[in-house]
Structure formats: structure tokens, C-alpha cells
Length: 133
Image (cartoon, rainbow, N blue to C red; front, side, top):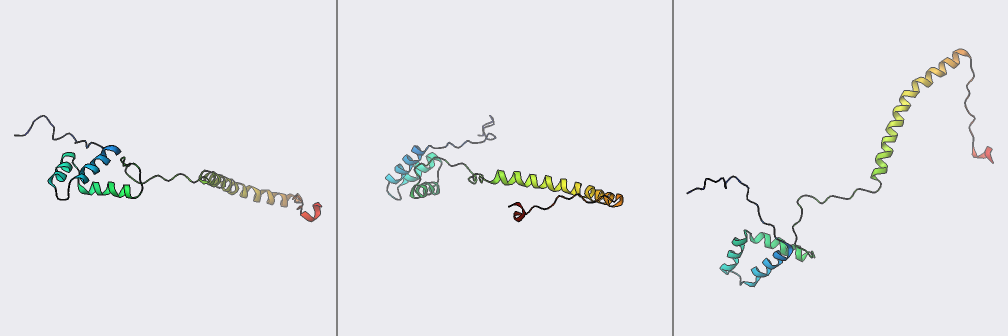
């Protein structure tokens, strides 16, 4: 007979085990001889598979001190220390290039007007190291 209280539609929440509980589970599982029915009963009672125990053992073999649950997904990489500076410089370069493209036509018009009016160019003399000393 099926229950009509809606239990089927509610998601089943899996209990998460602490690191100590996982170690105790491994110890209990390993305490039974291979092929003993109590091993399977222990796994069924906690809703686990042997593959999960294998993964816990692998983590211990790799030197992890805790068997606490890991967050899913890739581990986020810390930002590069110069990434913020590079982004700022790229924005500044783009801004300056946009200003230059606006200024170039104005400079060309000013040159033409100066040529038409006969005004000599007022370019600043180039200063080199040899003339400074």
C-alpha cells in the first residue's frame, strides 16, 4: 500500500558523515573478515558502496589528514597578483587610443590651417642627451 502523504515527491537528503565518522566506518568495515555478510550490512545501513570506501582510503594514502567532505567542482585558482594592474593598463591604453583617434583629425586640420595662413610650425626642438650635458 502506497502512502498518500507526499513522501515520494520530497527529495531524499543524504546524511553527510564527518571525518571521524568516516574513519570509524573504515575501521568497522576493515574489522570484519573479507566476505563477511556484516560488511555488506554495514554498507547498506549507511547507504554506502565499497567504491566510496576505496576513495576514502585513497585520500588517506595520498596524505590527507581529514576525510571531511570536499566541495564539488574545480578548486578556484587565486588571482594572479599582476592581473588587476594588467587590466587597469589595458583599459587605460584603450582610452588613450580612443582619444588619439579623435585628436588626429583635429591636428591634421590645424596643420592645414597653419599652412594656409603661412604660420610657421612651432614644434619644440628635440632635446638629446648630447646637447643637455
